[in-house]
Length: 266
Image: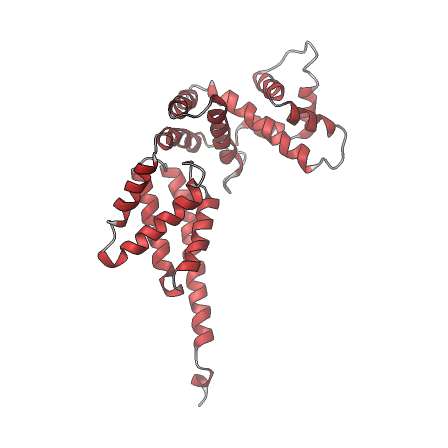
């Protein structure tokens, strides 16, 4: 995660910085960003300050602390020499397609939050590369229209053989319904888990492994369209490996249940 988020997950450190707001104390860059975030989100600032001295801070205080830390980290990233230009490009693309500045800021903050908490990777490591590719994907996602998505569904379905086209289409539809029901956004493990659960409900157990393999092909397709980066695809594919293994175990269990108990009798 971004070092600023790691610094301010410590509640006493966050409160100590917030208490500098009305003083003439010299601030470092992280402190300045944190105080600016607090000024923009007074509800979050109030919730965090209410936890002053608490042995067991409320979940509300902890959630609002993450809001402030994430927004402050996003502000620091916006002036980073590597990530800053990507933030600028992403926000420009989003606003060009009708997003308000606030909505664009929200999507950038969401990307920062996902890098920090969305995966099992070492939280002490800030994965600049993963966040960079996520920010780059926002520009491509921003330009998507429903017509373009419909064309993608048709094109992907045609990649299957005649007998597989219905499965290819169903897999693609389930993924996009899960991830993009409220508009195109980076596809997350939660989206993929939801699509896999739905797949398990609509295909036979014997076809589940093939359906998951088709889902991997769809991730490859989306990567070609530049809405999934290389690292995101790698992380999502790890989920598919787990799903395939679980599906195979379920098939074995189903097979054992169906076996004739008299088969072992002499």
